[in-house]
Length: 278
Image (cartoon, rainbow, N blue to C red; front, side, top):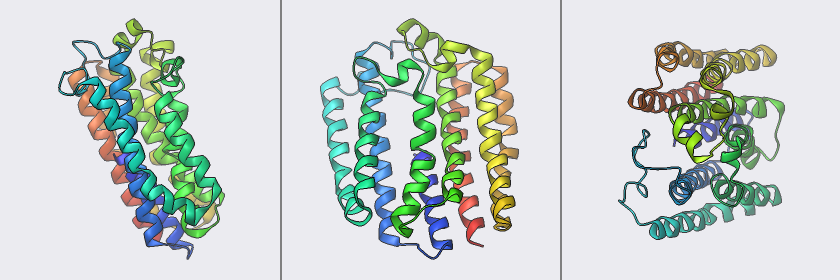
């Protein structure tokens, strides 16, 4: 859930720094983002089971439908319920921010379902990386900023690329770990299409650009907010994780990488946000 928390923190910090911060809007954005991500995870759990992608012997963290812990029908009902709950903060968000958030909300839920559902699931076509980058990146940070400040700028959009790329790194670890199972199931992720070496390089470049390049570019062009460079610490902490990614495809090791990458994303969001305000 760090993928939802970090961009909202960053957008809120940047809005407050610009004099447009608004606490209720920040809270609504956070709750809405968390509910949509939970709903997306539920939908993935359901559709990957129905399509046979989550088969016996899956190496990743437990999927409750595949494990038999939750009946498929129950998981689908839970998915619908969570998306309906997202309408509660969503109603306030639309009331405050207007029609752009109708578009963002509908497209977020639509793509959440179509990611693994429907006749042509987008994640199965290798489009997951782009969707994750956009919706957990510039849309989340820029949308949070706009909801509070009633404006947006290149700084907020560019900053959004950082959590978006960290989220791409999380997805890449998933795809690297599941490459053989996805290939058998016909799930054509970028890792399946281009191979293990590509996936490892995608993870590396995502971490480098998110944790190093984006903060440096933002501070250089704004000629300030130098404390936000404390977020560079995440790149140093990523070094041992990168060694694991380039060393093994083993499921348990990559599950650990998955968890630690999520922690890096959250740490980056906190360090960048606090640093931007100082």
